[in-house]
Length: 251
Image: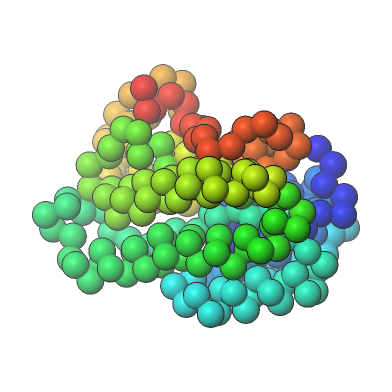
């Protein structure tokens, strides 16, 4: 896939999945901007890797729940890099695994603000620019939106709503040439998937992996492959759908 002359934005670029996606898009020839939550060292290292691919990059620490901050960042990157072809939402706040009955309301509000509102803010800010280039949006969600996982509601609830948001954008913006899709990871050796395995302990982790038809965890690179495909011209007639990259765990 050749993305020469294209510009991609990855929201959540310093996470395990976001970084893999940013690097893949740069390897395919896109200039890549990304936001990050707090880790400036990881952001600087990712910028260096993007530059090593021969591409331009731009990053900023952005509070995703702040609509004005997100809009300002998007406008700035478009000014610096010349436009926007692809938006990838790959962010997700840290949270503790907990049963619904034990989730503190403040944690619920914090996660909804950072994840669901953050995704909406990014999409809302990017749409005017994406319309100019008939661009694409890919949101990284979770395979658990199809098959719920106990104690994981703080991840699954906002991701389910983000799935609905992508379907709405696909329906409304198709006339402008914009496509919107989701990639739903299963247990991935990196990011939230790895955090879940670490939290439940070795025995439970082994049981969860044995319940996956392919009997293994996925990789960040496999998620990047799926995002690269759905955001490319190879998927030019695909919109409003979810690609599960999960080893079949949702079956």
